Amino acid sequence: MPGWLEAGAWGLLGGAALVVGAAVAWFVTVPSKVVAAVMAFGAGVLISALAFDLALEAAETGGLAVTAVSFLAGALLYVAANAVLARHGARHRKRSGAQQPSESEQGGSGAAIAVGALLDGVPESVVLGVGLLGGGGVSTAVVAAVFISNVPEGLSSVAGMKRAGRSAGYVFGVWVGIALVSALAAAVGYAALGGASPQVVAAITALAAGAILTMIADTMIPEAFERTQVYTGLIATLGFLVAFTISRLGA
Image 1: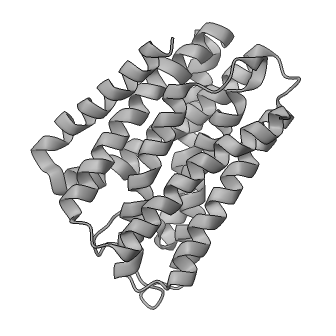
Image 2 (image 1 turned 90 degrees about the vertical axis):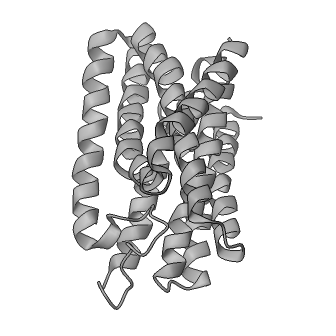
Image 3 (image 1 turned 120 degrees about the vertical axis):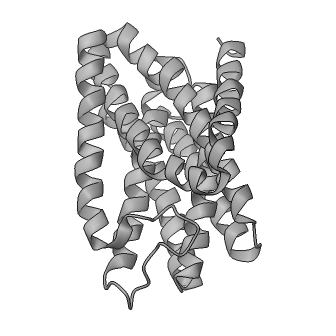
C-alpha cells in the first residue's frame, strides 16, 4: 500500500471514532456523567501520547529548541483560531449540556461549530500521517489515544448539538465530513513532508502536539470537570496510565 494511502486510512480511522461517538449520542441517551467520565479518560490518554510519543520523539529528532518553539506556536495558533470561532458561537462545541447556542440564538453558529470541530481534529490527523515517515509505522499509543479520545469528543459535542436543535443532516454531515477531511489531512501530511528533513518533521509534530494539548485544556477538561468534579483527575490519571502502558509495551 502506498504510504500516503496508509496515512489516509489511519486518519480515517481516527475520524471514524468521532462518527461512532456522534451516532451513540444521537440514538442513545447517555447520562451526562458517563459522557464526562469518558471525556476525562480520553484527555488523560491524549496527554500521555503527547508527552511520551509526540513531544519526546520531536525533541530527540529535532532538538529541544525546535520542539519548544513549535509546540508553543501550535498552542498560540490554536488559541487565536479558537478565539475567532468563539465569537461566532463555537465556544462550547464540545459541551454536552445546553451551552451551545441554536441557530436562532446566534446566526452562523452552526458553521462556526463545524469549523471548530475541524480545527480540533486536523492536528491529530496530521500527527498520524507524519508518524509514518521514515518507515517506522504509526505509534500504537498515538492511534489508541486519538481513537479513544475522539469517541467521547463526538459523543459530547453531538449531545450538545441535539439539545440546541441541530438536525440529523447537519450533525452527521459535520462528523462524516470531518472524518473524510481527517483522512485527507493525514494523507497530505505524509505526501507533503515525504522529502522533508527530520528537523522539519519534528517541528510539524511539535506544532500539532501543542495545538492538541491546548485543545484538551480548553475544551475536553472543562466538559469533564463540570460533571465528574473531584473524580476528574483520577479518571484522567487512569487514561494516562493506560496510554503509557500501551506505549511502553509497544516500545
